[in-house]
Amino acid sequence: MIVLGVILLIIGFVTGISILWTIGIVLLLIGVVLWVVGALGHAVGGRRHYY
Image (cartoon, rainbow, N blue to C red; front, side, top):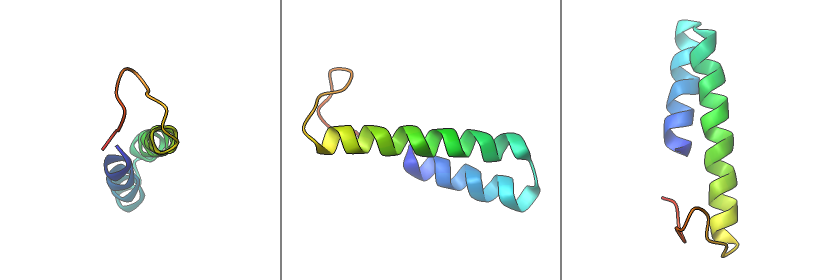
């Protein structure tokens, strides 16, 4: 999810499409939150790790 967010940020920046920029930021933030919570050892949504 983090990689997809970064890809959308880059595409949105290069093409000037603001909706891709916004979706990229949201996906990046969700990916980072899930990564941190998983790294702390908490199961989120029944899964121990998110890759």
